[in-house]
Image 1 (tube, one colour):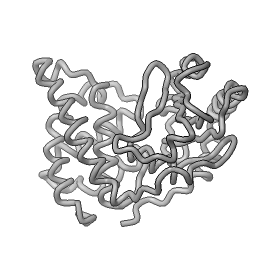
Image 2 (cartoon, rainbow, N blue to C red):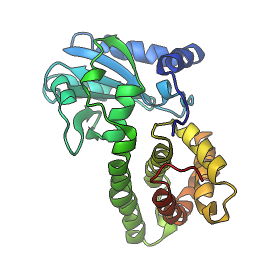
Image 3 (spheres, rainbow, N blue to C red):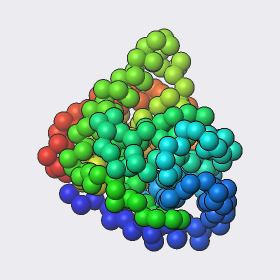
Image 4 (cartoon, rainbow, N blue to C red):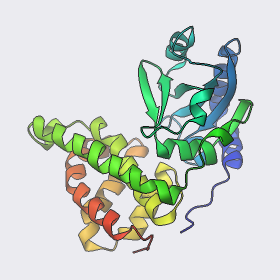
Length: 268
């Protein structure tokens, strides 16, 4: 177990130093919400994990509202803040305390979403409070190794199966667009990393680990090819993005086998 060691505060400061516009976006979002009942603003995701890629990664901000965010000015403000780079969501402070089987409901631009176990682990352990109170301790202290089984079942039974059903319904690999598989493929690989290490990693770090760990195993070739394509896509390789749908379908059975052999945390 163990995995990659990450200092969220250090990674946050490093990212803002290298990318001044990121800091400007965060400060602008905080100012825009200053008159709303905000108890806390938390930066999570790729920035504190050390995986932020300029012009590609989102700036993930969690606003914790004093009370339900569904009414009032929150929806309009979130829609205004939402941009290709800024991904704000808001959750009620009372919901952070509750542990719901299906996760924590949250409000985001143009959609309602749910923060699942992996998100909650990231927010509690791999984030930075940029404004207000530190309420992360009210999130249940989920244990990565204990929770990963549920995450994997969700990925395998819901996300992956849904994509494969969509693939069949559209009549073949060429009909499935790359954006349909990007997020689910990244979650698959990060889940496998977490299963092996009992910790979470950024997208680039998890991909680099998977390529190194399984690259010499011939039976893992489709899975490694998916990892390499995702790594290239993170560098804005358009060719890699176009190839993802076909690679994804071939890699999913290999991923399932790797999950089965890795439940005890053994490295290959």
